[in-house]
Image 1 (cartoon, one colour):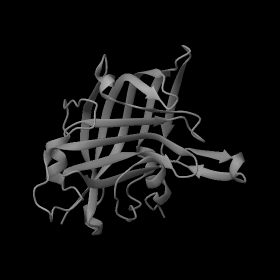
Image 2 (cartoon, one colour):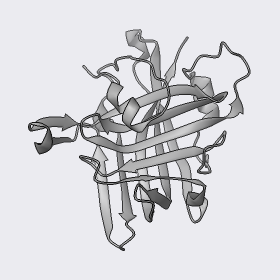
Image 3 (cartoon, one colour):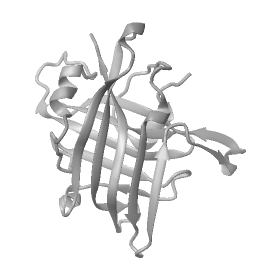
Amino acid sequence: MRILLLILLASAIIGCKKNVEFPAEIRPNEFWVQYSITNDTGITTDEYYQGEDTVTLTNVHNALASLDYFTFEAIQGNVKEITAGLADFLAGVPISVRIKSPDLVTDPNTPEQWTAAELERLLYPGKTFAYGDAPGEVLLKLEGYPNRPWACTSSTATNQNGYFEVLEISDYGAPEIGIPYFGKKVHIKFAGPLTNDSGNTWTLQNGEAVLFFRYYTF
C-alpha cells in the first residue's frame, strides 16, 4: 500500500500536502526520468530512474528502497502550486518538479488541491515554462540516487540556454472505483545550467520525464 512520503516533505519540498493513498491502478513503474548531467569538473553521466526501481541501502541496515511517485499541493504567498516527482524517503528524490499557477489566489477558501480544469489550463502539449520562483514558473530539483551524493536546483539562470516544455499529457487513473482524485500523466523535456549544492554550476542536457500530477473531483 503506497502512502505519500511524509519525511520527504521536510527534507526535499517546502509546502503542505494531504495524506492519501494511491490506488493500485496507478503504478509507479509508469513514471520515469532520464537525463545527462555534466559536473563542474567536466565529467558527464547519464541517469535513468523508474518507479519501482529498488536498491539496497547498506548504510541503513540493508534496507530495501523502492522508488515511488508523489504529488504535493500547496498555496504559498497567495499562489497555488503543485509538485510532482519520484522519491523514496530513505534513498532520495531523483526528480522534483514544482509548478506555480500564473494566477494569484484571491479567495481565502480556495482549496490547495487542484481540479482537472485547473491542471488543463496549466499543462498542455507545447506549453513552455520559465525557471524561477514567480507565478507561472517552474522549479526543478535533481538528486543523485541513492543516498543523495549530490543535488542540483534550477534558478532564473537556468533560462540561459535552458528549456522546460510539456510534450504530452493524458488522463490517468480509474474514476470508476470511486476515489476522489485522479491525475494527469505528463511527459516533459528540460535542460539548462543548474546550481549544485556546493554552489558550482552543473549542466543538464536531454532531460525527459513522465510524472503524475494529481487532481481532485470535488
